[in-house]
Length: 551
Image (cartoon, rainbow, N blue to C red; front, side, top):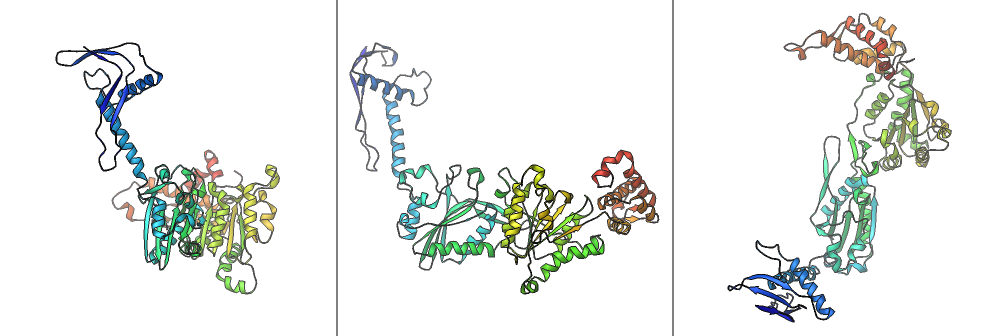
């Protein structure tokens, strides 16, 4: 029987020469009188405690010893959970490893040390010059960075980690970071990139997310922080912050990047639209679209209407130099209005195909809120055209809602704010011209010309039937009857008529071997039957959707 009381001293080996924490001995005041019953083999069979005695300090150390024992390794089978000297030794080893890791963190390369070594100067003594871009310009800024790095004598790219979901941060914050905070904020890590589109046919470019760039160009040594958009972390735009070893070198770099981001802009001469995400259209990369290719024969309009539209858009674009030299303004607005289904969108597509060298920004539906951004792109990438379809959704009468809508205010300001000699055309469409703000519809400088696209007349309907027949083998011997019955219909109605007649013909002739190699034959009866079906009372809603007058 052994009685335990007073203090117990547990020898510990001294630290090695590697600098590990030295622990000569650990003295624990048990503050209790206990009793261990041992078997003849020395194995403990139980433990009885008596009320603790001693000073408050001794009782505090008793609680500490108990905590050390309870936080040690998992109990082995048959272990009664009693404190053992080996538990304290293991806990001490864990503390030593943690202390060593914290102490040696300052010895690891930090952003400040890497930048300072590259510049040969304390980075905190240098001015930081920055340049910012909207999020959708990410791919263009990367193009500018690639050109800058390729032209330099040497460069290094270091990735960043632990920067997301921490809010905004700048180069000065990173360069002035205390070494002890190195593990608790943005720090050097792997280089990460994202792939962004650069064209309508699947072209892409790999773009940095966040990185430190170290560049040597002659006698200039430059360090730059690049930070791409990360809306989830409240980092909305693209930021480049630069420090250099020579006064003026940092500002020269940011100016060069700004210039190159315009010169190498991948949106130039393309048809683009804003995407939509949960963070808004401003946070999404632009979407590329294939430019339509329509011939004048594909656009069925009265000759006078066609001439007005083409002259205002295509004619001014092709004679821009002569008109500018003559002191005539190039900025212009064209409003296409008329009932649904008469070909306003088709006219827009024809004009987009004619202006092959023009940058076109489309705004429709949920992306109408990006008017300011669209105008910024057009201003930078002239010649340009901004297409705003269904403009009545944002430019209704002021008294309709009791005040001027913000989007209308933005649109009018942007149209007025462009220089008169800016080669930018605003192409607007609407089904409800009666709702449009008079200033938008009539004042020069906002809308120069409003063109009414009316329902097709008899001759136009004849041309539309031939156009929409396409490769079908259609019997048009009773076409005059069809034209008589379709007075007041839209182009969309006639397109659906030919499609439905083709479906009737295909259903009448079951497919056989080689059926797909020969034209589908549509008889006059098929055409008349399709028209009967469309004009039937059960298709009243269909006719209304297709824009039939009076429905």
